[in-house]
Amino acid sequence: MKNKTNAVQVIARATKCPDFEPDEIFSLMRRLNMNEKGLAILMNVTPATVRLWTSGAVKPCGTAKRIMQIYSACPEVISKISVETEESNAETDT
Image (cartoon, rainbow, N blue to C red):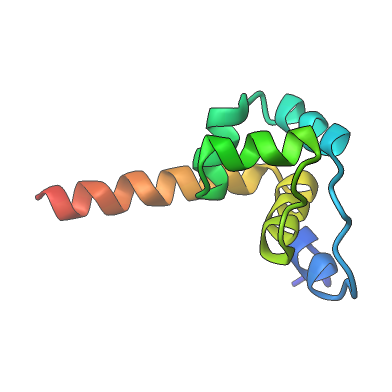
């Protein structure tokens, strides 16, 4: 097995999360092809919270910053989460 470092391992070694200023949050939304509502669903917060972040009125908390850092570094994790959620929902429906 190759000694391959993935994004999560790199982030886990990081000592501090970036601050994610409003322009960086907008950039992340563009990169993920999402609007405020989509990012809110992804981050498990309300759209009003995302609006506060993007207006600069409130800064994201440490956990939100870490999650945004992961999505920035490894956007493919979103599709993995989506697939796992769909599979989990299908199992509970049967």
